[in-house]
Length: 403
Image 1 (cartoon, rainbow, N blue to C red):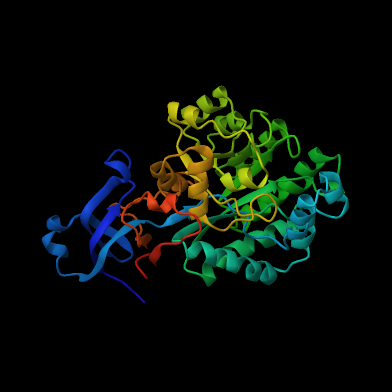
Image 2 (cartoon, rainbow, N blue to C red):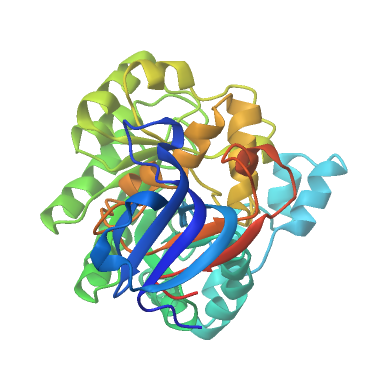
């Protein structure tokens, strides 16, 4: 149902505008939007006279927040790793799982064997699960092709999602995700011969919004990632990085030197890395789904992030291996229970700061000029969104002014 020019009344509004009251909360509020954009929000008694004639919808005291943003996903992929999950729980070692065809390379093989249509159809149920929780913007990475043809196919499939569902998609080229089997022990050659040329091809086709990488002992060194970032910079593409997930190689500090939008995971981040991120304005994207699935014990340095004013975002990290999760509400709860974020930080992490982690400036807050991407909730207080487990209180979802 279209809601072109509308005035929502009888609501609470968590604007998530920084520096106001907690959550930017306005009681007994109203929101006006026209042509898919917010034109005013405030107390009901202060509705401007020129907006008084808009069609009104009373929402029964419900809470309205910005539409949620999942700023780190691998939602396009072939196959699944359920059998591998079962094997590990039955005592199989990492090596045994690998010999049986498990691990990231199993996803690479499944993804290489899938058509664009196959990838889209497999991803749609995962997208629908996020939409049902009030998500209006999803970041989607490549990285399970590790060859030019499949990396581009993944990115085309990601773009296609926005044609099939009322959702915004931003893409990240993640060619530097792992070394494919045909380049075993030749990771430098893979960067030069496959990763960087594929990135250039993706950019020429208009398929990539940012460039990502995995800086880790099981992936790529800081020097190799720097070569990828140099190529991205030459193309005018912003960068982000999987960093300090399993060890500290200084990836986050490297990303900060390049003015990265975000550094993600960061469980092993140290004080110097936090300081570099704070100075660069790089967002810390925390991924509690992977922390939970991998039984990690070292949590991200949340207190240090706060001390250095590093914005904190949260995401699902939806992927077939380490975070087979398609619930941003669960990610919020995990962020609070596992990482000791406050509910206000968790909600900021999937709205205002998630937008910042993607370099997007027209959503994530309820303010004049922003897109009318909103979530309406059957809750009495914003903290309920992070508090409940396995419960979805969404009442309705507004995307560019349409219900």
